[in-house]
Image (cartoon, rainbow, N blue to C red; front, top):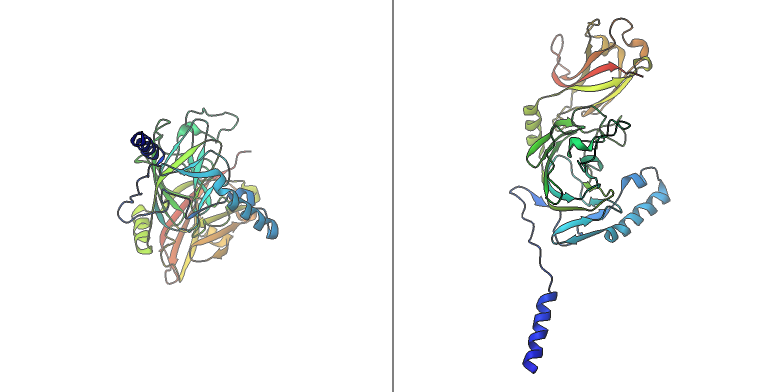
Length: 354
């Protein structure tokens, strides 16, 4: 009888022992930023809830979100799990130029996203949702992986291809960001090719140099695993940007009767641009004065990484077509004459239709 009782006790012990998830194994050169065991290295923060708060109210809100984090997030079988509610999972550490690897699995009618440098977002959709003619810029059926909070109809805002797997299967992102330029692969398919990620919080300013990674909660369960990161050093970043070449023909709508204001982030912002100037030039079919924009524009700021340009309405073309291209160049102070320097980006400007 005693032997039987002992056997039952041993059997019960075997049943209740939890299974241990495998230790995350990052590829060479990467490190794991989620340990697969607990929430170490992460805290709760939905920036949309706190962005307009100040002083005591801001501090109270941030504390509340931190305190609520563990109520909405859990670790299960080595996966970081959220039911679609609560503050976003936010890294304690901030990152700049990176390669990020991350797997996710979600459910129908949910959507989510990955915030880079605390800024939205690499979008995750339920691609079975149809487009809505009343909201033509929201198209989940075009696939996940786009920079959804960029200006509609600009490169990278919608993915190049649909690469999502069926519900119940794991999807894998590889995200590379250098300065504001962003490359995204979903399930080994390129969906964003070096597009500029806009600063959602203030589009007149460049993307922050560093910030946390955030995993969004939005309406349905999502699971994350294998979260690995590699920080890209300045010399490698400069080489990658040089090989990629400048960003060209970015769509840009402007109501020209009110003038033109835009902010341009220099694409090789990891390079040393000290002692250099930004030069603004423009052309159109009936407008050929290459020096016009240099004369008409005011450089409000130049910090070696970005410039803010303002062109008054009185200085914009009055005759002929109002469509033109703006090119942004960087040149050393010693350059003169016909040598414009290095082309960084171009904007196609078209008259806004109202």
